[in-house]
Image 1 (cartoon, rainbow, N blue to C red):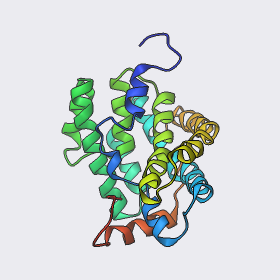
Image 2: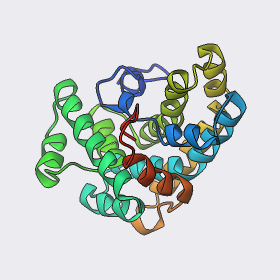
Image 3: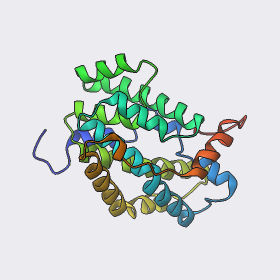
Length: 225
């Protein structure tokens, strides 16, 4: 790692063009759009803030703990317990498999091989992200930052397609969340540093879970989740 303030590996991992499969998922906003809960930049901002401070914090803490070297199988069990929706559990594992596949090509590392062997069905995405981050030379705080960012960047990007939202407005929504993203990442990393899986955040968003089950049953949808 260089002495740059932002490690290049973090930029690569947080880039929406990294082939980890995230472009096919809306982070629950497709269902929110159809239900009328998101229809413009203001309601998108509220949706993203809610997601960031609930499931975003939980995922960021799992990623930070994995990057810190906590047993990924124990973290995977914790992620499973923190995800009530079967549809979201399946989506998380699909994303974890794709992320690991891309990372094994980008940053070959024994830890990635061990994770693939230990969880052949796919690790939950935030757990895989933390292990990948460590393999790429990143620390827990950086892993938490990337996952917190992803928790809102996915819905924002999806709304450009779902609503025809002005990309400039979408970018303004995302930039307005930079301080909250940093605060969530800091809290996630601090909790992960305690070294106790049971103390990691358990915050969830029941409406996201319920909407995910409805969304999975739609015969036609633009995003996988």
